[in-house]
Amino acid sequence: MSVNGIGTAGYPLTGYTARKTGRSAEPKTVGFMETVEEKAAQGKAGDQDEKAFEMVGRGAPQEVKDAWMDAAKEVNANGMGIRGNGMMSHISQIMVQRLNKQLKGETENFDILGNTVESAIQATKEALYDLEHPRVYTPRSIEVQQARIKEGEFYRAFLEKLEQL
Image (cartoon, rainbow, N blue to C red; front, side, top):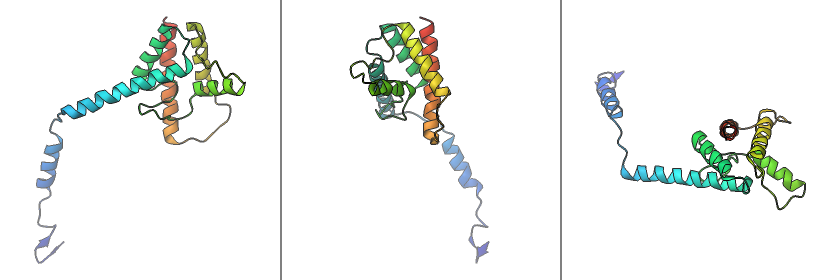
């Protein structure tokens, strides 16, 4: 439509989109600051994975800790649902096990993974079973559902690494 020759009818649209497409097709170069920020974020995530492990596996052997850290790096999530920024994404099944110990009056021993590889395997299997077989249906947001899927991936990867020990 055009009024006195002014309007969109006379303007070719191809020139604009061709330039825009050409610009978006250019290879992106990552600058120094973006690389530094990415490395810092990876370091923070690793710190959170270690803090999460300390919450539930303080007395566990080093090979259990190594398996935890490898699984967390592989899946990009940890068994406690703690994100790289330190915030919890949801209440994980291992956190539920920890809270159950508190409710039973255990105030000293929050070592869910125990002090052997076998005890860590047992705790992980229990957490995975509880995750896959919830006792009560509770509606959850999309974000929590996605976090629970990642939690399951973490438990499977962690269990696989523990069973190889």
